[in-house]
Structure formats: C-alpha cells, structure tokens
Image (cartoon, rainbow, N blue to C red; front, side, top):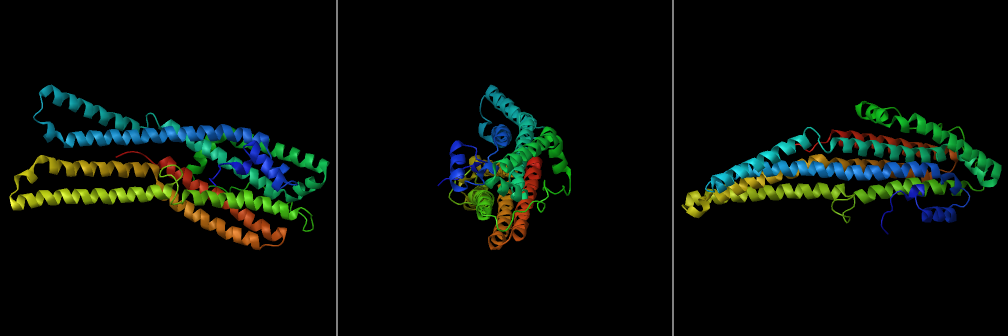
Length: 363
C-alpha cells in the first residue's frame, strides 16, 4: 500500500472513520478539526512554494550551463555569418545574466523558498503540538473515554492550548523561523509537561491509548523515513537516497566520457589521425564537463545526500525509542521514549530548515 501523507492527523473523513474503529475510546482526543484546517492551508502552500522555488533554481542552473556551453563551443560556429554569431553571443549573454539574477540574487525563487520553509515549519510544529498534547494529557484523555463531562473538559483544554499556540507561534512564524535557523542551539521543542498528567496503570483503556500513539506517531514517522530511504520509489519525488545515487552515478559517467574524449584526442595526435584532431572532440569534452558542473550544482541545491543521511539518523533514533516504548510496562516507563520521540522530531527538523535555507543553485 502506498504511503498516505498526513493521515496521522486524520485529514480525510476516511482517516477519521478508520481511527474511530481502531481506537473508539481515545480517537476523539486526536480528532482536531481546528488544527486540521490550519494545517491544510500551510501544507498546500508549502508544497506549491517548494515546487516553484526548486523549479526556478533548476532553471537558473540550466541557463548558466547553456551560457558556458555556448561560449566553450565558439570554435564550432566560428565560420557562421557574423549576424548569426552575434545572435548566439547575445543569447548566451542573456542566459548568463538571467542565471545570475535568479541563482545568486534570488530573483523568482528566494521568496518562494522562504515561504516553503516557514510553512513547513508550521506544519511540523502543528503535528508536534498535536501529538505532544496527546502524550502529555493521558490522564485527562482516558477520563474522557469514560465520562462525557471529562471528555468535554479535555477538548476545551485542548482548544485553549491550541489558541495559545496559534497566537504565540503561528502568528510569529517568520520570527520563529529565523530564530531557529540563526541559532546555534535552539531551545527544546517540547511544548508541555509530560509527567504532570500520566494515566492510571489500571485504566481499562490504557493499552488502546498507547497503541494509538504507537501506530500514529512511532510507526508513521518510521514509515516516512522508510519512504524517503527506499530504493523502489519515484526517482525525484520523496526519494533523496535515490537522487543522491543518481547524481553520484551521473558524475562518474561524465568523468568517464571526458577522459575517453581526451584519450581519443591524445591517441589521434600520437597516431597522426587528423579526424581525431577535429575541434568537435576537444569541445565535446569541455561541454560534458560543464554539463557535469551543472548537475553538481543542482545536487547542491537539492541536497539529497544530506537529506538521506538526516533521515537515516532520525530512523535510528526512532527505532531505538520505539523498542524502549514496546518494552515498557508502566506509564512512567513509557513516557520517556515518548519524550525522546518528540525531541527527535524537533531536532530532526532543525537541520532540514537550516540546510535548505542555506542551499543555493549557483555555479
């Protein structure tokens, strides 16, 4: 079955129906319509901004590569009429200037990248608020599973906390973003006191409460890491590990082609073969080298290797905490790996924001 994004917060009606069947007594605590409404706005905008910002970054690299290739191949069209040479030179100059304007000065994509990253910060902190509130209020949630008044009291508490989070964080999103990317050691990502409202050990719905957290938090985060590190998913979308291998293989291929072309030119000069001394062979080597440089610049902008390694380290932390969680028997024992997961979720987000904020598509 394909990975379904954001079904851990019940974005669709089908998600909510499934949760009610799987966790009939505690699903109410994870059904937060107000949070979903805010989440969807930021998520849609983040996805759109990411696509557009990276598209313009790739365009900048392609323009720069084209300008360099045109200049390097001038000997191939040296015999063309003057007006054609002039037109080619003007086109190459335009490509070079446009690439600098887009790639170095950020025209067309810097604002979109900032919008993508700030909105992604919002969605991840919303998700963290969602599950941290659940983890930190186990006692109140399980009381609400048995009593309608207690259920209403918990929902009222959650709504008040969410409104406070919206005012304190979401309405200051840009400031919060720069505070994270510019700080050497951002504060802890924990939003609540996790030990203040632990559930009773003899509560009849205790295992259901913990099973819901395990499936929707631990397992969904592990599944997400597995998606990004998979060898069998789409080459570009949600596949940084495959992207990194693709760019590595492309670089080696280009190197082999350049060495082969240079070898042909060298052999031609030694063996006295005039056709191997033709400009096309030496120029082709330079063109392939510029192509490899462009590919490497795109790789630097996308940062797939860094992304893949970040996911590997996050998955290791998740698996360790998950093992401790499954081995724990009491609420006191289980709250520690829950805290570890929430800390890891926040700490994993920081290098993502910093790396992508600093990444450029500049040759």
